[in-house]
Image (spheres, rainbow, N blue to C red):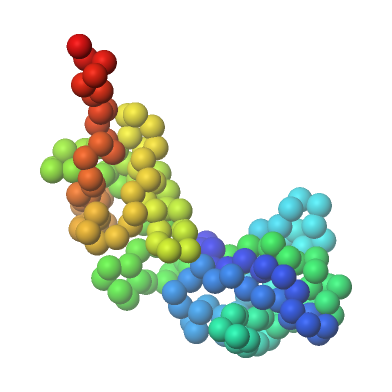
Length: 178
């Protein structure tokens, strides 16, 4: 499963919802007939249900979704803050520099050929993704950009990083060393 969006607020009176996109492929993920598994609170009327997209429109550069059986604003309001997930089983990634989260989690993280931790998860932030690395000193967050993560080798189960100093080693305070 892959998280592709979050419903942020009702739009208009006919049940439309503004969507915060978590995908670089909205034209692939948000097509008429696309079905989404919903992540909602336990007390929501939408628990265990799917949502089917009728249409995606853009208003002032913001995506707005129209969904099957969501015909008015009152129904739309019950979906605010729902997270949209899609099943990616059987999909293959065509971009050689793009990976699904599940492909990265658990990979060994190498710095200068030495293991410094393992990939715990990815945090998808508005500006860029963060690689969260479980190390001996706790979790370390590293921007998932080519300059700091030059190599991912899924077959070898490794991620090579070139972080700035201080992220994986203790910094000695020279004043307290006297």
